[in-house]
Image 1 (spheres, helix red, strand yellow):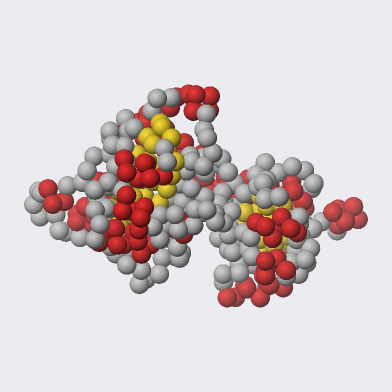
Image 2: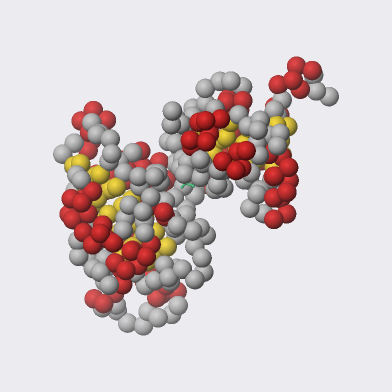
Length: 334
Ligand code: DGY
């Protein structure tokens, strides 16, 4: 039986992606919760029905545009279980005064680990050579047609020097002796913010970075400015034999241009965790391309980190609904 004061503050919450059971219980203790995944045909109508009265939403990997927002007239806050906010129509949220929360910080190191794994896998041909063993094709010592190339000591160019870019730079510069170039829209005060990287990282223009890096890794957010940033011109600027890695968002890359650079240009290999369409369509030429190591968008996908993201996203939603400042409040455009 609810006490009157309790029911007065209970809000309608819509959970649109699975949450750990204990985090769901935190929400259910304080609010009236509907769990409905709009990607599942069996749950789409429950999701649509709940939108009309929902005040708080929590989930990820589903586009929230102005049409959906128009069907949620009472919505006050969305808590995304992700750091990326490219699924959301930010101006529409700002215009409605709807708060958006996300999960920065807790996934930084794990995502940098994934991107560094792609650098290693692409350079040393790890997946290709592991498959040789798995499939019984290791019948003699491998020759130089299957040799990879070194990672240590190579120049790494990082597009985007936020939390994840910096974590990647630490791995490269301090662990692998790699000179690091970075391209970032805002200036970074390396001496005060990253003293351990002083003298080991250098800001450049986009073109200079592409021309001088042996390995280029993308960790930029997807915005109007970065959509399609890597096209034919940019791949054409990269060094002969360079490696391209994308751990950010697929739409930052023009995939046709990447394929052309792999097939007809001088790109050695690509390591991709993200694609313009996810899951990657079965007929995508990137899926089985011999020079591509493709992962199913697992940047933050470890048991520890996905749990930390769910806990933070749940706290963000509870705080916002209680009128308290959420740790992961995203600053919407004004
Ligand atoms: C993120 O948190 O943005 C990851 O890419 C998962 O979407």
